[in-house]
Length: 195
Image (cartoon, rainbow, N blue to C red):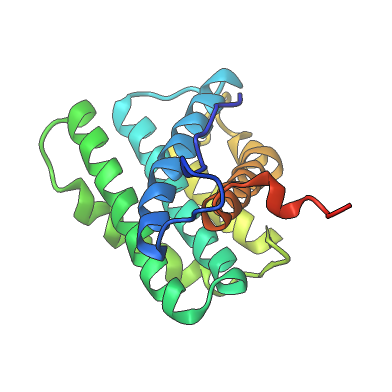
């Protein structure tokens, strides 16, 4: 399942600051996480309730923030990365809080998101991520968390394979493309060779 993602600044060639790019990418991550959770349903995996669906979205957001940090390590200067990643994490936490509160009712979902992000980053950070691609161990760890949420019943026991083989790599590819578009200003002319 694909979704149209707005990941370019209005004026081609003019990229935003590292903070603005992080905030904008937070919305992109929300769209990617929401689409991925819908894709699981489209592939006939079953959510028991909204709590389960929201937990899957949270795991995707956490994974995307981590992947963006790893991608930023290779593409941004240290001061820009130090601004970009927290802006992204806070934007994702805000998106998650607003939407979880709408679906599940009142609660401190922002803090829940940040706590989950910190716990996952300590484990995800030990896994390989090279050339813009998450390694097997990272995808396995991520898919383990999704599997734990979805359960091991007859219908959902294959969700780990879906996440590891298809959805996980897919969202990272889309994330990398969106990061490139935001940081470069989204102008296609920049990559066109002069004749």
